[in-house]
Image (cartoon, rainbow, N blue to C red; front, side, top):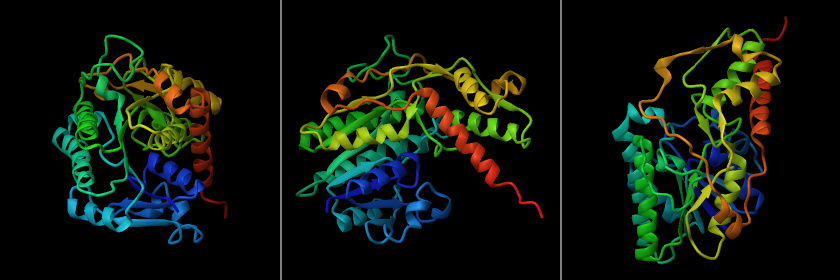
Length: 332
């Protein structure tokens, strides 16, 4: 039975990836922070399945800041594939916590690469990076050859991690790949991210639990895809005959206003009545025209996204409506 090790298994991408690998017949191992509450995580349904947990799904307590715990997990599991998804993921917060962001992203990648180069049979390695490495690109769409000119601490850290993977791939022959991930969302997205924040607010306002929604730049545009599609590309990358980096995107730009239109439309409300502008939510430096060209992934991997922007936001909003309804106290 092939074996995979996932860091960040309790998050959005890690949970979808775990489901996909289990469906593929893999034995899946995941690293979990020492005090992480699994009951509230995105893999709670997998942990609660006795046919999976302890049978083909195994969790290991480890800390990315403690290399010894990572090394022990790596040696104990001896995976065929290693997916490194864990680390800071909030771009805006990286301005407030630049040192911890850079340490978690850049040195997190370095620790794994250093451990892998010492193994006689290192696993195939996937490193999650971000379109934030491109910053404010002069041309759109961007591809794997677009220069890295990040404008956020998060983007700088991701650029460092991406280049490290290339160095270790060329210098030590590691089968190491980077996914240059554009924004990817789902009902499992963290509540602080704007798409989830909007979908959650639309449901709450419809239910009468919230009166208004404060947002920053409504004209900010992103290339938004579904996380479920993107983890499929991660798997294909590690099963290709040659390691390489790939842009994973939809190739389409949508604004925050577009998210509002779809999300509030699902619940039958006009978002203009409820959304307020908060200048304090604007970033010091906002990336622009970040839209990806996935020609290489389409040609090499046969991959393309399957979920439209409208279906993505609709799925997220409907999930919030169900959660809001399920959380209402029952009538006595």
